[in-house]
Length: 186
Image (tube, rainbow, N blue to C red; front, side):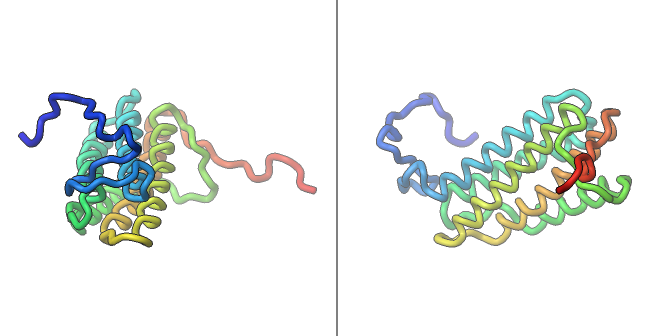
């Protein structure tokens, strides 16, 4: 087992800084901290999706693997120069996405977040994933970030969209379609 936290508070961050994995300190509002913080938020949102009723074992298994990979990604972002997310992780996301999407009907309309608690929670995770991706892009403009980090988040947001569709359908709630003709124009 790695490091064990015996004391939760250290008081070292009281000045608005935090320690990175390489031992250096940076502002709690730095782009790097923002990026790995949003990845952590995404991981928590995925946990909320898994806590909802009606998440079948195949989806749960995929989401648990994703949570582990997000923890790795957070570590990569927390330790400048670290490489933890690999191309095979992205390939695995694509394989899961293709398998789940194969049974879904083609989209003809936009889908609104909803379709039951699990699906709605997954849609929330998807939007947090998109923010994490934007945060990683912003960090990459000023510091070195491996392209795998951005690619992983981009593919993951697509997968979370498909998982939300699957969850909505499996729950019996169905997908909530955007009704663009619902009110008169002009």
